[in-house]
Length: 254
Ligand SMILES: NC(=O)C1=CN([C@@H]2O[C@H](COP(=O)(O)OP(=O)(O)OC[C@H]3O[C@@H](n4cnc5c(N)ncnc54)[C@H](OP(=O)(O)O)[C@@H]3O)[C@@H](O)[C@H]2O)C=CC1
Ligand SMILES: O=C(O)C1=N[C@H](C(=O)O)C[C@H](O)C1
Image (cartoon, rainbow, N blue to C red; front, side, top):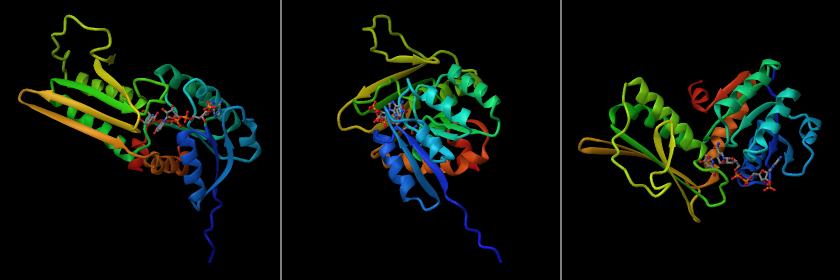
């Protein structure tokens, strides 16, 4: 009989002193099958991560530094689980080009690691074909750097794809006179409204309307602990998923 005792996965955290990074360090530290080997924040030496033998990096930093971090991880052959926002189709293409030289490396970029948020996006995509109108209202804490949120942008893209596949055209809207910004930002033809207020964490409503009825799909992250089951799932899965994975959806179906 052999003992099936696996070595813990060695994890480095980038953005370790940030709001989410702090929570990630706590969650990794508390997991018996994971070992927190490096905590790196602004001004720290990135090579601490490779020196510590990290197998997986978790990045919750800022949109302006995440690409350099990710490029470094791929070059080092370290898998990456990324929650930082700011990803565009062009950025994803760059990540794919780096991975072409390191086909064994896995990178997961998820706009939202909350399981409820993933379901909210899936439900919104499913509902989209049945409604003439849809608008997204995202609400976040006031220290957030980007607007709209990555989750709102991703939701808008999913909804727009579903509407296009169903042959739906432009949404009804008679607005002629508009104070700039009053109708929100337009992402792939979907209006997105961003609220920033003290007291909030991360919240989103997708509001659908058609003749005589509306449907509101709402998700609330009331605590950053809500992102941790998704982050840990990513950390445990990414080594067996070489290449680029976008969104948590595929991992939830494994
Ligand atoms: N996908 C998801 O589920 C979620 C994604 N997010 C996203 O994660 C990101 C971080 O959010 P949040 O934790 O609230 O932000 P914070 O500003 O609290 O944390 C970011 C941290 O990264 C640090 N940092 C800056 N540059 C570097 C660098 N080069 N190397 C390492 N660390 C660095 C910052 O330091 P300093 O403050 O000194 O600049 C800060 O401590 C955002 O893009 C946010 O939208 C957030 C929640 C969930
Ligand atoms: O900055 C945040 O807080 C969050 N960022 C992500 C986003 O932009 O969608 C995920 C979540 O909304 C929290």
